[in-house]
Image 1 (cartoon, rainbow over the protein chains, first blue to last red):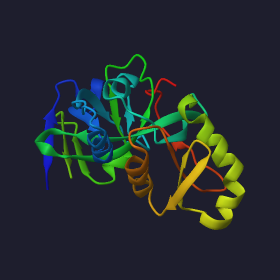
Image 2 (cartoon, one colour; image 1 turned 180 degrees about the vertical axis):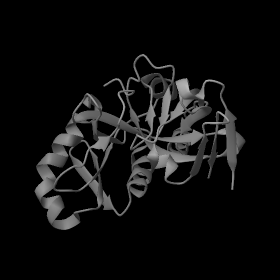
Image 3 (cartoon, each protein chain N blue to C red; image 1 turned 90 degrees about the horizontal axis):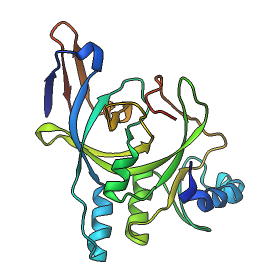
Length: 142
Length: 79
């Protein structure tokens, strides 16, 4: 089972943060190749693993850097917002150790946050996550 | 905001009654005014969109009577 463990001295303050890359979905790569268009390199991002998030989220800068085109729209509710429409994009999320896979991620501002990505329960539905507060570490296994 | 897919959302609304009668629960793919097909999974519909249309905006949506929002417990999204 591919997996990675991260230890963060301030895990309680920051939450489970992970460095990762966001790239184009394979289907988009094929479409660009067919067109003879250059494929943008994956973008590095700091992501927060968020068990309170139904789906994964990416920052608008990632959308812009990858030249992503939307494939859907979802209604989103948060603690302070109701039924806000957010665009959806097909992307490839890549963690350490070559672990990763395709997701349909929402675009949201992530204002005032030091992260560019949220890892939601769409990704966690394929994983086992162990959060060890005593050791200030967490493990994600796929 | 959903500017890039406004036309597709309008097409979905217009065709919803028909889609519910024929394809409830399936994933429809729409580009401009055209319904291009329905699929059992979201990724199948998206794959078809990239294959047939290329890297452009298109709408893949599950055909349902009511839409369940995606919930986020925190305010991290900034929306």
